[in-house]
Image (cartoon, rainbow, N blue to C red; front, top):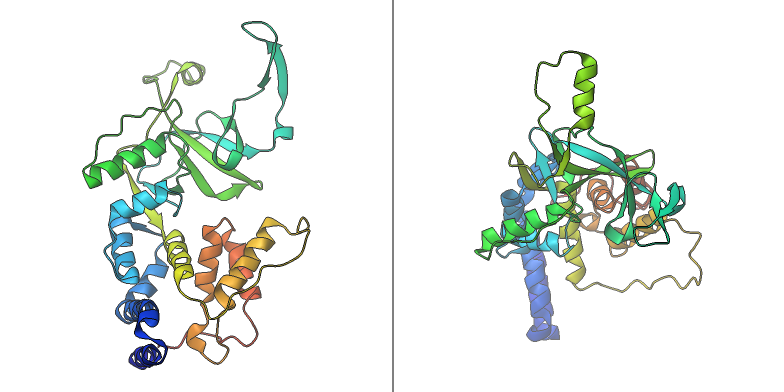
Length: 335
């Protein structure tokens, strides 16, 4: 069937002009051969929560029909095109921050060093990505082994930049950062996004004379910001990989353009609903009712929504809700 589609593309070239059709034929040829070569691998891919940079690069090389290296993925992450993550083999020491609203912070005015009054928060606060305000909650809860997303707002950005330069044979990254490396959970804590700053502590020794002495040592130890530890590795979540693939499809010609809404006021539309509407346009606007091979899988739609901030449960429900009644049910037919 994929050979037949390529033949159709060739006839289109003869009628409309090879010069105009060649980019479309190349894109079609790339996509069809990628599906033909990766039919079994894509099933295994969806079972994995994350991939190493090398495995992700091999997958993208087949999907894009061009060489993609781990360094390319790092550069895309630094440029904000894909969400990069880190896998902690043994967990890490960290202190917990949560996103807060400015009005939720308890502020107090204190005398400044050079006169006047200075407004300070009752607990440390800082502004990070997209103007998000986060506040320190706990000094040292630590984080469990597993995959954590990198917001690239602290020392972790220097670590990634240095890794990129090493892979391409560039200069050593000599930048410094007073903050530790930050990681972000893809889950919310009481409806708020949680961040963790990696730190190290003074050695508190061993064999305390009493539990009270042990608690005192823990309280008095000094905290130092930390980079990503040696027993960690940079990875890519499968959902982030599929999002990057889906975004690349926007470069392909569309059968028809979908006009944006002309509503003058959209203040009543939540961010989550706007994202779901975007997913409906992205995956279903150009689907052919009579061709089940153009109907996306709910898992792919959910992965895209998760990659853009929706929880797993909401993403799966949204993928089912936006699936049209006429859409093919069950496994997508082989092309």
